[in-house]
Amino acid sequence: MLTVFKARSVITMNPSQPRAEAVAVRDGRIVEVGSLESMAPWLATQPHEIDERFADAVLTPGFIDPHLHPTMAAVILPMSFITALPWQLPWGDVPATVDPAGYDARLNELHRDHPTGEPLIVWGYHPLWHGPMSRERINGVSRERPIVVWHRSFHELYMNDGTLEWLGIDHESAGRRAQIDLEKGHFFENGLGFAIARLNPFLLHPDRYRDGLERLQAVVHQGGHTTIGDMAVGIFDFDMEMRTTREVLDRESVPFRIEMIPTALSLLRRFDSQKKILRFADTLPETNSERLRFARRIKLFADGAFFSQLAQVGEPGYIDGHHGEWMMTPETLEAAARVYWNAGYRIHLHVTGDLGLELGLDILEKLQWERPRFNHGWTFEHFGFSTPEQVQRIAALGANVSANVYYLHELSHIYAREGIGYERASQMARLKSCVDAGICTALHSDFTMAPAQPLNSAWVAVNRINCEGEMMCAEERLSAEEALAAITISAARILGRENEIGSIRAGKMADFTVLGTDPLTVEPAQLADIPVLATVFEGRIHPIAPSPAR
Image (cartoon, rainbow, N blue to C red; front, side, top):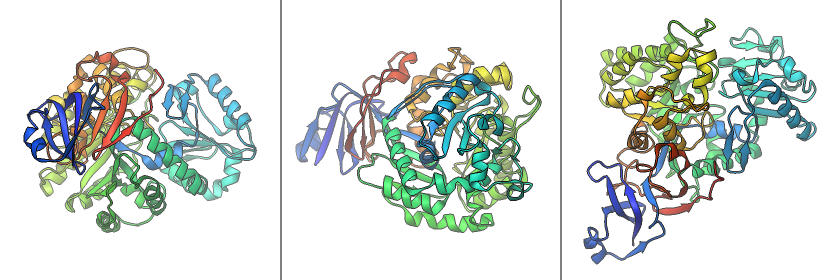
């Protein structure tokens, strides 16, 4: 039977038919888009029902976040939060904590209220708000209870004495591993992997991890998503992650699908060469289901975390003189990229600084010279700092950009003062230049690096207003339509599924996000406040509980 959804307006993201009044759906796919009058041939010959529940609402294509981390979220969401900006989550709000004294007070409060003997893990620390962190500072709260302070970036953490003793970490076990400062209890980038391996039995306990995935499901649905990309499958324990993800998220009641992209850096713990990882990755599509799907895609890493100021930047560097960190050395990255490029994989490269981006462009250019490919899908993920010249190279080489524009909102004001200077801080997430150059440009949350709220990302991209209320580089603002494309059809292209999702036209999956206000006519400042009323996933309606007023 046909179901025809009527709406105040249907925004299709199909340039041949930008607006419509109704969408006819059958067996999870769109049959026709238009009006009841234009659908008359179908309605005259097919059993049908007219569904007017959305008659006063606006339908858009189902929102897509092409870079989100269900596993990382499942680990973080059961933690306690102390963050510089407020967070709204389905189960409660997190107030802002903006100075060292406030951080210490809140950490002491959490310690006092936490169950006796249970480790306390706190996510959201950032030194530019909360001051320098150290083993001794955490010891000031408690030396006995294991307490972990996890950086906002997720790429680094700090432990107190109780945690080091609990995990059996000392100078002998840590050895001379890079990116570990045991005196400060500091583990970052590759050193974080050592710490996580010791924490995994606690973090990945089946009950805790399952609860985290259930919370993640609520967060994703609240944002209006119908498709997300898991851009780091295997970051902790590939087999456990997949087993639990299938149990929790591969169910009929889950109103979204997940594109699964393994990370070659994490899989090196399991396999000792990129060629072995490739052979393993080649088998993964055989495990696909309706909601969880692997394709020929892989994630690689260039430079460090943006929130940690470990993005590799060119001259003149950071204000304090440092330049960042590599997660994969340039030689290692090039060798790995060549393996997957020659095998026909789409490569998603984590880059946060302009020097990391330059390295990625150089490698892509070399691989194109060695073995040319069309529609290769190489995507620069995050896209923090860049130059106008690099944008032109991205376009010339046929690459894509998937950007975390939330960097601009949370960090531009403080990075202008204490990071990289006003010029480069104001021009982070150089999106309008990308769109104007014809680059496929999408927005993502990298959740939990940004709220998993596509309309909030669109609001930042359109207004470029930071958390201090200052507009940063008005020239790089997107239009509302460009921003909507970046969370629908362009995001679908990043994931290689533009023929199935991302716009509303005959033949595509019947995925819609139902909004209370038209995002293309509302005042730009109000984009983030548009109520998300429901999603329609493959023709089935999934209502969303109202969020508290911002």
